[in-house]
Each structure stands twice: as C-alpha cells, then as structure tokens.
Amino acid sequence: MLSRVASTLYWMSRYVERAENTARVLDVTWRMSLLVQEPELQNQEWFAPLNITGTLFPFSGRHDEVCAREVLHFMALDAENPGSIFSCARQARENARAVRGSITSEMWEVLNSTWLEMQHMDEDLMDARGVSSFFDWVKERSHLFRGVTFGTMHRDDAYEFARLGTHMERADSTARILDVKYHVLLPSVKDVGGAVDYYQWSAVLRSVAAFEAYRKVYRDVITPLKLAELLILRDDIPRSLRFCLRQVFETLGHVQNAQSGESLRLAGQVLAGLQYGRISEIFAGGLHEYLTEFLESMQDLSAQIQRSFFSSRVVE
Image 1 (cartoon, rainbow, N blue to C red):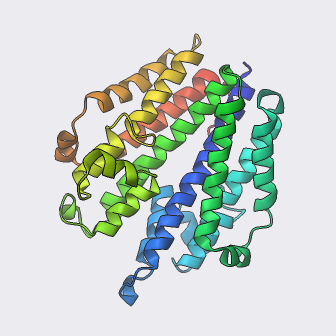
Image 2 (image 1 turned 30 degrees about the horizontal axis):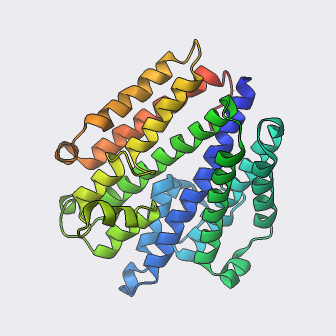
C-alpha cells in the first residue's frame, strides 16, 4: 500500500475518534456543571476539557474567561481550533475524500453527511437542539462510522491502518482523561486514593463509556483504585489502555514491513507493562507519573509508526 494512502486512512480514523472523545468529555463536563455549586466554583470544571486536550494555552490567547459558553464554542464549533469537533469532522471527511477508492461507499456517506450537517451547526442551533443532544449526535455518528467500517470494509491493509488510527487515538484520550482527573481536578495530590465525590468518579466512567462495565466487573461503589485498574489494566474494556495497546500491537503485526520492527517492539514493550503491571505498584509510584510516562511512550510510538509506514508525511 502507498504510504500516502496508509497515512490518510490512519488519520481519517484518528479524527473520527478524536471528535467522539471530545464530545464525551464536553458532555460529561456540561452535565456536571448543571449540579448546584458554590458561585466561585461554577466555572472551575471547564478547565478540565482544556487540560485534557492540551489546549488551555491557545484558548487563553483568544478568550478572557474560562466558562461554559466560551469552552463549548472553542472545543465544539471553532473552525480555527484544529482539535474542535468541527475541525475533526472536516479533516475526517477530507481524508476520506482523498482515499475514496480504498474505503466503502457507506463509510464515505457517513463522513460526508456528518460534515454537511456540521457546517450548519452554531451556538443557537446547539442550544435549540440541546447541548447533550448535540454531543449524543456526534457520538452516534462515530459509532455509525465504526459500524459500517467493520461491517463493509475488506480486511486488507486499508482496514488495518484505519483500525490502527482508532486505537492509537483512543489510548491517548483515555490516559489524558485519567491524568486530568487525578492530577488536576482533585484538590491536591494527597487526596488521590481518598474519599472523592461519587458523581465525579461516575463522570470519569461515563466519559469513556465504562460506567455499566464497572458495575458488572466490581459490583461495588466506585473507588479510585478499581476505576484506574479498569481503565488501565483490564483487557476486556474497549477503551482501557491495555485493550487499545493489544489492538495496536496485533495490527502492527498484520501490516509489518522491513522498516516496522522498531514500531512493533515499542508497542510490545508498552503492552507488556500493561499485561504484567499491578495497580498497587502503579499507585505506589504515582499515577500521574505513570500516565505521563505512558503518554510519552505513545508519542514515541506514534512518531515511529510515522517513520515506519508513512515516509515523509508530517505527524499531525
């Protein structure tokens, strides 16, 4: 497969997954903001989406206040923010258009119709539809895209690179959500592992679609240790770090070439740590430190995948 085609398919799927993850984080933040709070704390939770996506600095350069309306516009509808849902939908559609011959007509129709509808979206229409309803629509379009990809695409290298992009993006997002929850949202580092409000913990699970899974696995109240174990080390949770890295490792094995040995080694190294790690040891060494190291490893892996398969294409 041409490196240009492989790269385009890879980023097409990453943009779709990124749009969904952003919608999940914003939806949970929106719902949490509706709870009765002290006036001085009313906008505090809106720092979380900016910290998760690493966009607090560019946001601050263009906005004077961190509040619901400003953050929602910046992260959902701002065409100048490359990480907004609007921009992700546009980039996913443009990448799909560039590789029409490698994807199915059903995949193209989903991305094209999503982009056409997104172009008409603004704050007034979002408010009229309902903020949470808009985010549900974004998630449903992402689910539909993955469904038609799985149900209609030939199992060749094109399919493998599309799946590779999905799981690379998903692992990065899950790690960021966990890191911000433990290191930014908590009052102080000493509170990690202590008694924390139930609604905040359930919000983390809902942001990664794992609330019901937690109840089935543990049948207990939500605790920091078990929540982290579920989203880091469990192999049967679709958005856990271990599940995503297993998918990445297996996919790299399917598409390996003469230059991809280091990519496979790096993915295997990260996966081995997740397979044989213990959550008690992770907490003992510091969860923030562990997640920071994981994200750095994912950046290294992403760069190596770039060198192994996509030649001189620029990492986005």
